[in-house]
Image 1 (spheres, rainbow, N blue to C red):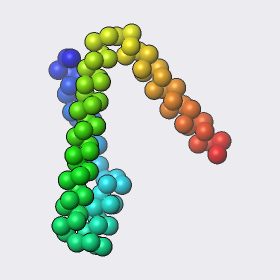
Image 2 (image 1 turned 135 degrees about the horizontal axis):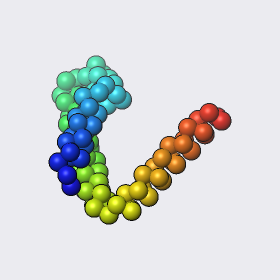
Image 3 (image 1 turned 90 degrees about the vertical axis):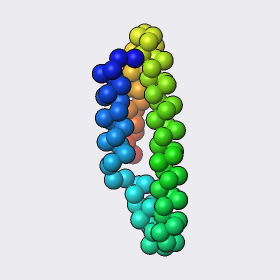
Amino acid sequence: MEYSTLFSFAIVTLSQTISIGPGVALVINNAFSQGLKSSIKTSIYIRAGEAIVMVISLFTLSSTSSIEQHFYIIKILGGSYLIYIGVMGLIN
């Protein structure tokens, strides 16, 4: 894997971790309803889950980028799925 690809992956992962989303809402909810200790546990579990997903996606990216044809097929399938989700969202 090239360093530029790894750097891009790290930037995207960092921006995902920093962004406010449902995980932050869950941690805040737990802090108010169950206390600080519970919210810290929840935060650790969320970050552990993100780390697992990051490692899996990194291995997937490195293995598919070495086989360019497979990477192209995965990109086409992913784009098709996003178009399908968009169309279904507009229909419903």
